[in-house]
Length: 462
Image (cartoon, rainbow, N blue to C red; front, side, top):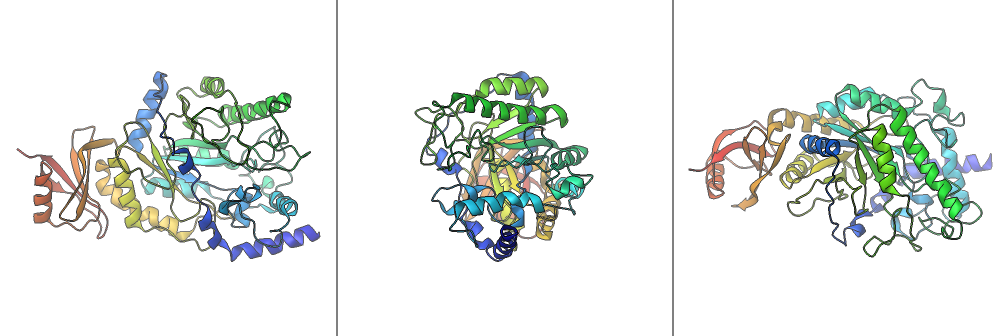
């Protein structure tokens, strides 16, 4: 009972400490120190689906789990690394094992009774989003889906929400977004810090990596591989059509000269991804596999995190970015403006990428009203300007800055060309002059709200 009392105290403490979530820095940036080579897929079904995905441009990502009750960074506070995003706070801050125990007992109080995935899906569709990726399991190992592999899951009798008719949250989310005609993706963490075959309870964890010698205990690693294969098999087998498998935890990969070295004890962690992808595509033909930060044929598109590459990239890619500041729920979080979000979307599209925008549900299962407001604003802009975004590819000269106005250029599959004033401040005479310098004449101006990017349909100057 004392542990639960302290857990309640900790929950209260974190409600007033969400500012520290700003310290959750991008982990993917390290992987980009080595510019990764892109390996195009050979499977014709994957190529076809990837082309369709590139046409969609704008998607939704959601990080959600019991950790939302504390308003802390997802999973990372139970990782014993000396990093800002792993920092523990509250009454257990100086006792790792007490903290981890209290963290894992969040399962016992997770009861998001206001969960309404249909409302989310409608808001995403109205916001112009065309696909969705949901965290089925983060690094802490808590499964937001029914699985036979563990009791650390949303449908366990130990979890209060298991009694709810919508207890299988992943199924409900997938069904709701499919019903809105959207592509569905499963975020899945390869590392599993709750599995005794990844972090063996015989020894304390030392960093994000396995806390035992894989070469010394090969049978344990084989059991962990089977655990991973079983969970992914369940997700691909019984949850309907899945279009994208978005794999996180890039330190779980074979050790090569160019692979990232994460944690204090990086090691060779081969789960035979080639074989796994082949098995999963038997269940889900054409599945897009995104094995993040793992250079090779199972990274069907690349995923820069929380930043936009500074130039046009010649391969499929997607910036994943938070709508607010935190990936997971943070009370009173600060949201990016509609102007910033639409400008970011336009810039990404003109450089050949997609935008995957994260919204974090609360412990009750709701979105902040600001998230709905932002999607309404973005959706209204896309309603009149979407032909410059969807089904497009970058158009030379790609980007210019003329008389202080930043322009980007796209062309859709119908041959229409577009020039986008990112600041939305150009007037007709200035726009004609700027675009003439870039080799275009204005055909018509599309409608846009004040302050949002302004779009012109253009033709080549004669």
